[in-house]
Length: 496
Image (cartoon, rainbow, N blue to C red; front, side, top):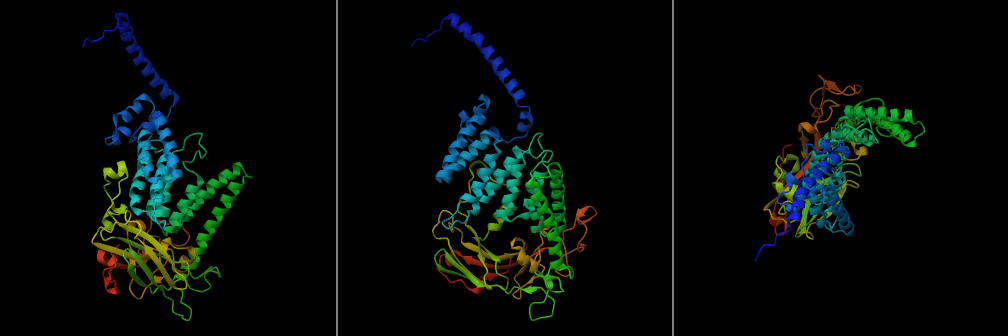
């Protein structure tokens, strides 16, 4: 078949048009850079579509060159919102991944996508699928790398560690990074990098770690900032309320310190004794000593993959006993110890489908607790593919209510157990401030005044958390109800 030849004049016009189009395209790129003076700073170091596409189609790689990347991402996010409202959560994951590749600076997608991964995948009784915590955290970390000047993503990373993971050292690091973000001129928080609430939650995080001097110091930084705002606008009710709350929190921290760790300045409604409350004698005794929790646990499998936990615990109402049922080697794959994250997790939010992990709590009432854990209705979430499992019951004073900490301390200094279920968590990131002698802490005791409490310019952390823990080692047959579970299956707790 003969090739059709265009007229010579048309071919000449096309040849002349090509360089004109190239010049216009270059001019467009130059003008776009002038329109957005921050574009170079935003683009620097980003992990975008080209570096992480992992087999994505060529038509999508063309979008950034045509200038349609953000527009395409926006349209996909509208579609994603429809899936949110319809409850089609599985369809959201690939869209979130694609949108963050197309627009690495869509901070709301990183934040919402990570929240979706950590909170929206649940079993039939609304327990979160803990397997999605790792990809959720990795998505936020990617968002931070691509958006180092936006504090919101670091705040979300901190909140997830504070609320969901209970990793307060990781939470403190993320909140601190948010506060240290360099502010944009003209932003609502300028000249500060993050909202005042970030100082507040960081102070609460330090208190959860048992690092009270740091908590007080952070409340004072927040107080100075709210006082500055109040001076500019003295009738602003928000600033008035925040300023009053900060003063109250500082006063409360000092009061709790005296009630729990000293023999003077007690609040009679909290500690009516003449002793530090962490070693105050129980009723009917005059011998100061830590409180005997006397934990007894019974774990049964009345039906396959259905478990009953029950027992007694000598502690105030409102305490919650945590339970974790997992593959025996779960710790080796735990996100806190993960040094390398697979490309599948980053690119597809791929979880380990054969991994079984459940976390829940049982509330103590009148020294008793009881709860049924039904894992039989969600085989996709609980595969029970392993041969050996670990069932751990833990009471962690760091995550409990303030009224229970009033009796037993920030780090469980006032806890003991005659059955020797106490475990000391000496991980350096989890050490609190030593506030009383003789309760397993190392180094100097805080003087109750110096804020922050430093030696040679460094924070002094020498108090390990005292955890009450019971560990079972069980076979798959036992969890399927084919073999009995007895006290002989209780094994020594792991060293922390």
